[in-house]
Each structure stands twice: as C-alpha cells, then as structure tokens.
Image (cartoon, rainbow, N blue to C red; front, side):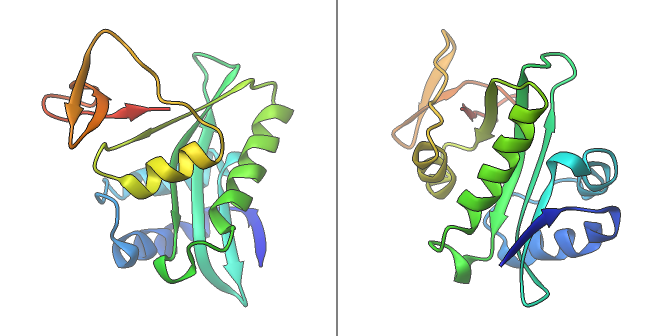
Length: 154
C-alpha cells in the first residue's frame, strides 16, 4: 500500500469513490477540487496496486495556525480494519506537526459511529460546549453546521 499526497487530477476519482463508498453525505463536489488543488500538501490518497482505496482531505487553519482540520477521511468499506485510515491519519498528523500544528480538529455527524470510533482510536477527544444536544445517544454541538445539523467536534 502506498500513501501519497493528493493531486488535482485525483479530484474526479475522489468524487466517484465518495459516491461509491456512500457512508458520508455527499458534499458539493467542488470542495474535493478545492482541497486537491489548494491543500494537496495536507491531503492524501491511499492506493493498492494502483487503485484508490482511501483518501484524507485536510488543511492547516489560517485562522488558528497551530490547528490542522481533518475535513474528510474515507476508506473503501471492503478494506476497513487494515490500518489504512490510521496510516493516512498518521501522515496527516506528521505533516501538520511539521507545519507547527499542535492540535488536530475533526467533525462528525453523531450518527456516524464508524467515524467516531476511528477518531477515538487515534486519540481525538470530543469537544464539550454549553450548546450540547443528545442525538441517538451521542452528545453533539447543537446546530453547529446550521439549523438541525448537529455535529460532534473532535
């Protein structure tokens, strides 16, 4: 397995894999293009025998330069449990630390138990605020991404 930086020409395959693997709400596809073009130093693709088996899209915060934000990490469902996500996360973390970041931030929907288990497994902790709501037994920040769009911030 190879983990490498993402490039602009990975954009369409990332769009196709996000649809195929479909365990996340598909975003405006332009975000994948923006990430692979302008933040490729902190975006990664995992490949096995030339096939994309995962990707991680992240960036260093311009507002909080000691923080890196992991926007999206996805692994082919048939390949989960083999350390692919962890390897991409470790590469992202090492790159972010090399840029001076001391903190990794991520967000997940409270219904996404897979993401939450992964984030806990790599050592991220949920953020608690005064504006919490319980969703499916999980504490989330109420309306974080808009009305009714509650999020667990890590």
